[in-house]
Image (cartoon, rainbow over all chains, first blue to last red; front, side):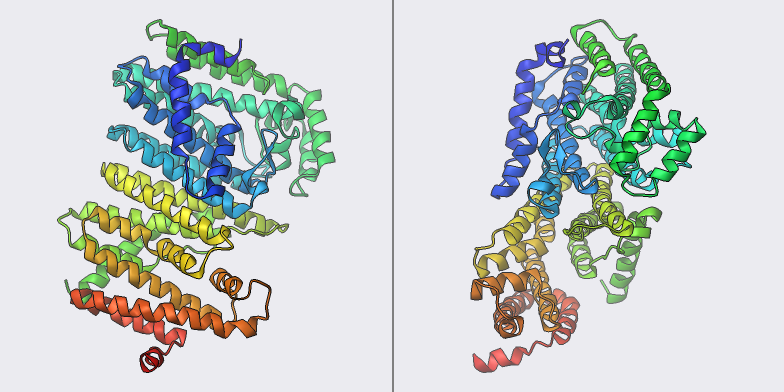
Length: 322
Length: 271
């Protein structure tokens, strides 16, 4: 099933979110405007707004309040991608030139800062102090996670707990916050809120682990960038941790890490070895465990079209190939 | 408030800001973030005018400065290709440091539930980035327009804060003081043969072609000095309406003028 089919009942509200995304990134300077719209037009799954809207349907749903969280979270995510491309020195994202490649690092920095500020201004019209505390804490955590990711690059001494904490901050937190803000914007009760928050966290963890698996199993066409890109940058992800159980692989990896970034040929050799053992299967098993926890988190909540959609999205995440 | 009290409070605020800036891993690779003491002093004086709790005053001052430091940090992101590991790390962590500092601004103001101030600073960030884009990317624009951009880049955070606090007079003083300080710093750099982005913009307007630096340096300085002279006049007029500010800031301005080698009397003599 296609992702858009799962939440087809949200079509009208999502197009309202899309329109507000466009309006919110409007800028006076032509390059700032072009860079921001290009980013928006590049698409993406809009998974965060979808989680906000679906979670909000467990309470008193008012799209004018709920969209404040949906739009802001997507923009915060977008702003972080623009800066990530400077960090990774990336020239392609989703198969298209990045802002830093098309213009330069300066334009990318200003665009990221501009979009971030637009998103914060936009969400201040959601008058819910808890929502702001939750979101602002998450943004601090996300920044710390990004710093840790750089610190841990090429570090073969780290353990899986480091990795799990990193992906929590990098991905799971914002998805969890998407569910939580949706619930807060629609005044759900505490019980529902805590279950939605947990659901978001577990789905987010599964989402990132799946992403990390796809980095080794996806084709360049599916990924919009060459496979093994994360490993090339020295990011030790779950399949690599499993592969490192084999001392020969660890030795090969340590040798490869002497060049930073790791050379293309060495990356290809490492990918081949990751495929030759059971690292991918074991990683999939972990992702599935998180998905099961996500299903369990939703279980006590009343059955509804939104609950069904959230469960289907979780399932989609576990099976996706891009 | 006495000068001693002001210094003590500024020192306390500097320590609080530094606490937010210090991250052990970041500090290994990035330049030490700079706290602009003049901006902090101006914010402190403005906040002192209002009936705020100590916590509010502190959160306002710290978060406003964190926004400024975040933007200043992002200005240091390198533009050229880098190969050396230390240079790569420096660039990566400079990006993240700026993001980290700005995340704290939102968090601190969320703690005191001040959505309106969060919005004010978010608008300031937008305006500054619009002006930076114009300054760096509109190659053909006039010197006057570029100077206007510099004005906005330097003072928007304080202007918006003054607006938020309903302090129109202080807004004018902060605006002019910070612009003049920036021009004096630019002047010092040009005197030291640093071809700053502002010098490049002026030179482009003067010659429309690549020209010998020494040949145009004097012309650039003439233009900068003209703006400085007018800025100083405006500032003195504003100070006459607010003697307390004059007392606090005049000494600092004199130091900047001395350092830049500017001779104001020359303009007075020439009329």
